[in-house]
Length: 199
Image 1 (cartoon, rainbow, N blue to C red):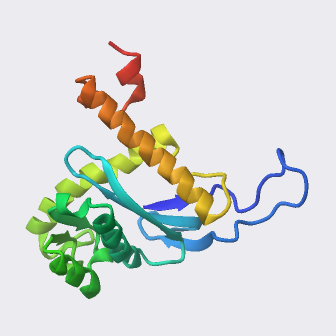
Image 2: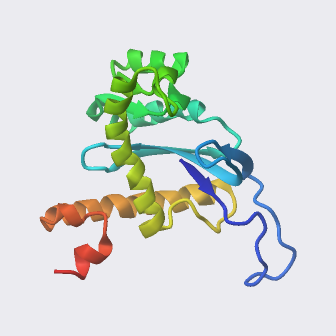
Image 3: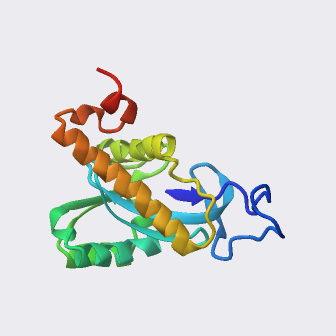
């Protein structure tokens, strides 16, 4: 998942003085959308059943996705959320020898897509399809967050400010999940409109 800043320079409408670029944002490339962007990359761990956000790691956009996986595992261990996860799914960017070794060390099942399970015509279609079923639920979560929570866009400058912004969005996401659960309307957890205003 990538987090993009809509424009590199502030428009100057609300701020007097010379516009300045974000010193921490870097140029990255999104292979799925086949375009370059300026901003940050977010690697997020989401539960596949109830879809809570368990942890995340933010890096400048010029860093590769695979480098965020080990810091995430260490963070999950520190926050004691790692024992609750049995298997890890992800695209082939995370399917590295180092990442698989860490999963083996923590005795977690590796369901990351291999190179043989990626692309339009994967060699291992059956296993690719099984993994994609789980991943599609998680990927749709990002679309919902982009629409309802303005995830993936920020007007803030500096990686620390963007981390705070993301943390607030993820906290809101998890809080509405809890609220919908206690209201016994968990099916409406992704839509604030349906949860509060309809029915």
